Amino acid sequence: MQATGAWQLGSDEERLALAMRQQDPRAAKKMALPVLQSAAARADRHLEGRVLTLLSQCESLLDNSVHSYELSLRALPLLQSVGDFREESKALAVLCRASSALGRNEQAIEAALLGLELARRSGDAAERTDAQSQLGKALFHAGCFDAARQHLREARSQAQVGSSVLEVFTSIVVEGVCEVMRYITERHETGRIPSLHNLLVLLELHADFERRHDIARTHPREQPLQATWRLVSSAAHCWMGGVEEACSELEAVRRWLDGHELAPSTRSLEALVVCEVAQAQGDWSGAQRAAARMIELAERTGREQTALVGHLMLSRVYEMQGKAHLALAQLKHLAAKERRIRSESLASRSTVVSWQLEMRRSEESRRALQVSAQQLERLALEDPMTGIANRRCFEQVAAQSLRTDQDLGGRRLCLALIDVDRFKQVNDGHGHLVGDKVLQVIAALLTEHIRANDLAARLAGDEFVLLLQQTDPTTAGEICERVRRAVADHRWSDLSAGLSVTVSLGVVQSQPGDTLETLLHRGDVAMYRHKAELRREAA
Image (cartoon, rainbow, N blue to C red; front, side):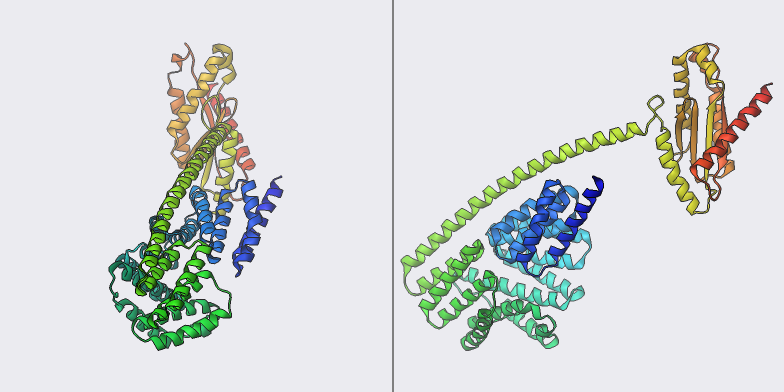
């Protein structure tokens, strides 16, 4: 049965690793789902959490924000319960993105803050840069623009120091998209044209970057990222009054987009820029279509935050045409959507609490079983009469210690076998209850007179053993003499009138090539030699 389980685990791990290497998120999902079912059936929390994280990443790439959100929430308590901080950090990053997309900004910021703390603890510079960027984006979506900009710039600085060229470029693009959203939001809230200073700085940064690096040649797979930047650049030129330049850049991007199947989020940004350029040209019907297209794309994929921006833009388009009632209707749609988002956010929090409570109950059950198993293990390694280690425990510890000693050439381990002298006479003359008490007292004296890293154990009957670590024969002899004297000097008459007890000890040092059997045999011989010497002295 164990061999089958081990094979199954290895098979699942291999399938998960293969799924993680897939470029196509749909293919990765198809490969990961059977692994998820297997992990759930075997109650393998760690594997289940990792698969759920991968699936949430796939859904995020496919712009399925609701599914991505739910999967990452399911993954987090599983990963927390097994202490896998790195995978938990990945799940938090997905949760942050999905929460922002769904307009659940407070939850996005919480996830980003926790993810940043975990990334700092990991010491991985790339993870810390990504977490810093995630927090910046979450703050931007929440309207905390100054704080967001600070974190995004810190992420960009970190990327410039220790990351790849692609990560530096990505940081510029991310901040550019956030600045576009900031411009739209501030224009709506203040009724004034916002400052373009930050966008101009980013345009200069990109121009300098482009002079030094050819991303199109070195990273041909990253054309969608380059297209996103060109949309940002088109919006910036439009707002600066360079409508012709904006149109030219937008048209080039749109031709490329039409030839490729991209995530709806990129198409939503395209619709935003089309709407802005159309307004600058006075093409109000084109602006209306573009804003409506942006809302439709966002709602199809559950990107509530983008849909909210689309309603803001459509309201402005109607307002600029003097259609106040239509502009007001869009604002009402906006208010209703925001209210629904808050309601869904509260409902999702309730679900999260339920999952956490269930996980806590499961964790408490697991800990109770663990404690029970530890107690059973302790009982299995403990002598029930004396409370010290039993033969099984001694053999496990001694075998490991001897292996270590042999690796170092031997002669660093000593063993002392101990036998109670004339123990049968104790039982016959004073009774078995007194005999049992004698063994308990000797066990206590052994424990009292050895060092912290030594081991005292009862082998069987009246035979005991001491395992003396990192000890030379002289020191071992001194320890054994203290034990012998302590036993001889004990007030045995308190147990039974006329009772006296002594022990015989045989001390041996490990030799190169020793096994536990040879060491015990030599100890046994030494102990009986000592017993014979005592008898001769007594005679």
